[in-house]
Image 1 (cartoon, helix red, strand yellow):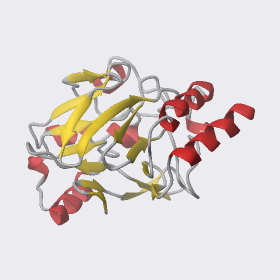
Image 2 (cartoon, one colour; image 1 turned 30 degrees about the horizontal axis):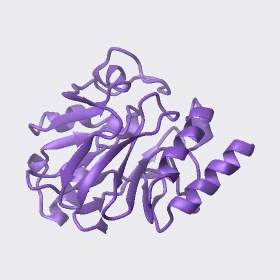
Image 3 (cartoon, helix red, strand yellow; image 1 turned 60 degrees about the vertical axis):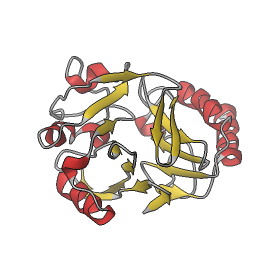
Image 4 (cartoon, helix red, strand yellow; image 1 turned 135 degrees about the vertical axis):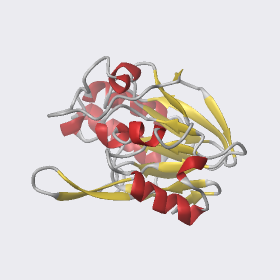
Length: 226
């Protein structure tokens, strides 16, 4: 699904957990003049499904030049080691997320065996900007769901890739409290998002919605009152 010129959602469905419940997640691909950026990589074993999406857009997996992880949870970073065995991609993550991804620390919310550790080449912080065919893609620090969670903002397209800072299972909503250890911090992070001029939002859980700034501010106010 093309969200904006050169920005694509890559929905991946998996049977998840002991009950085999289907879960759909939404990595993204952002085109640049130097090759595509893959935003999150999905669970371990996701490569075949990612390849199918890339093929439809006109790329091969080996064309991926950059991988940017919004945070270290297994449904976002689990397939990174597999991907790096197939590509020469440079990897980016927030400095607070790196220890979990590279294996120095166990993932905060993991139960059972963790995903294979993988290297991070570049650590990012707030306001770092990538040049893409959709215009600048700016990093926005949105901690709370995890210590160094980031979202990505395209000002030219008024598009937000929210990661897990927001969800959209039934319209745009706040982060899932069952998987957000620091809800107070996550709520405060919504202030940074509501300051942006957003018309369209892609949530990793729930997908794409035509909602933005006004709805984000309403969610923040509701969470602050609760």
